[in-house]
Length: 79
Image 1 (cartoon, rainbow, N blue to C red):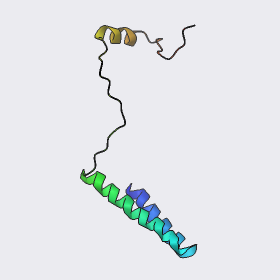
Image 2 (image 1 turned 135 degrees about the vertical axis):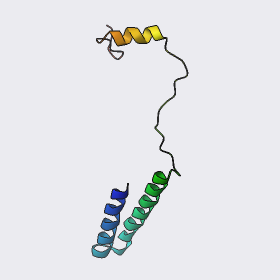
Image 3 (image 1 turned 180 degrees about the vertical axis):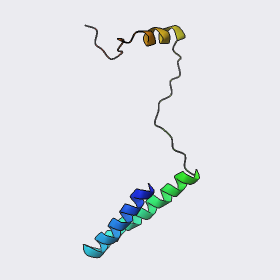
Image 4 (image 1 turned 90 degrees about the vertical axis):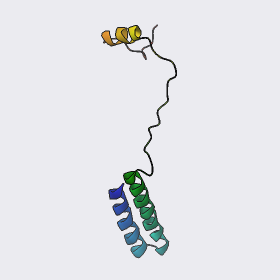
């Protein structure tokens, strides 16, 4: 995130100077990027994965059976 912040900052300054003055807003977004990078690095924001939690458990014998059969494909159609 720090690298993208540097690139965004440079891009914002160059675009604001050469193309159109309101494009300096891009440089302001880089400052937000730096703030988020700092928050993640310092642990103020925790990275969480978007993972669903299963509430039921799979019996151990079913797991062993599926792992023992390399041809098992739960997504295969059974016609």
